[in-house]
Amino acid sequence: MKIKTILDKICVKPSEVDKQTASGLYIPETSNELPIKGIVVSVGTGRISRDGNIVPLNINKGDTVMYPQGAGHSIKLDDEEHLILTEDQILAIVD
Image (cartoon, rainbow, N blue to C red; front, side, top):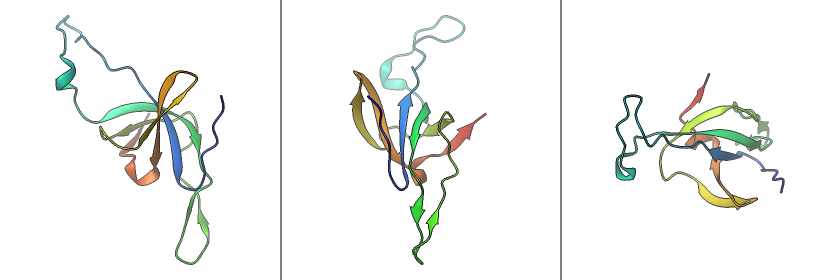
């Protein structure tokens, strides 16, 4: 299923959270560190400014982004969890 987000909405597929450290220790689910990373699947056209113009988003499809845990609205696409976020919920773009 394809999704096309609108305005300042961004669809993100969360990355898998490591359950084990590099040294072999297991990390309990309750101690997941913030923020969370994910891959951008769809980006809207931009937000509408006060004067009515569309301001393009700084995020592009395919970017890896960081966002706080609990942000956005959870949806299912093709039996996989995705999030719909707004641009202001994105903390950073990861290179």
